[in-house]
Length: 65
Image (cartoon, rainbow, N blue to C red):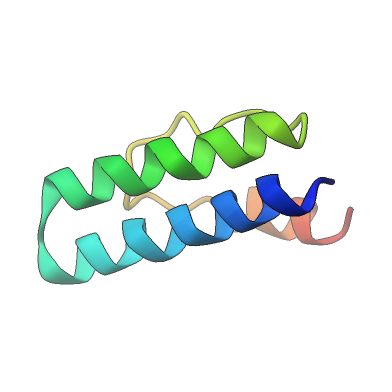
């Protein structure tokens, strides 16, 4: 995992979640795009679900890697 990819993913996550709280769709989409850039750099699959839909099982599996 690259540091740059990890930071991009984390920053995108924060922007995505903040956009959801503020009900700003554009901010959510930008956050998801940035998050996926970081995931791709780290050779992970991009998030393809609609922003705001959480798959807890998928997140737990990623945390255990």
